[in-house]
Length: 155
Image (cartoon, helix red, strand yellow):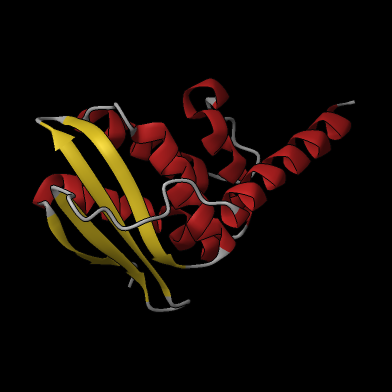
């Protein structure tokens, strides 16, 4: 039974990633952004820019544009849907949880409730080369919240 549950959950997770890749949410440049940062992964050619509109310490608006693999685009899409209305500190805490998820050992337990739909990326930890894809937009987000603008690279 546990194997069937695992397979069912994995299929659901794959569908979440594929859906956010096919129809990414908040995929647009934000002309009136207060902060933006570009994330580059020279190894695979991913190039994602994160745009933020801030109300003091709260993310009032967030979007992204650029190109990347399905995992990079889906991660950026899900991130933008989850962070609107959150504080910069809440966004950073979610990044820490997400990073822990994708860098932990395959099969390691994780807080599915805290991660919500980001749990879909649990399979990434089985493919360490894809960790950079999943976290690229998040690193760009941190750069935007801390420096206001810039470029981050996975290399």
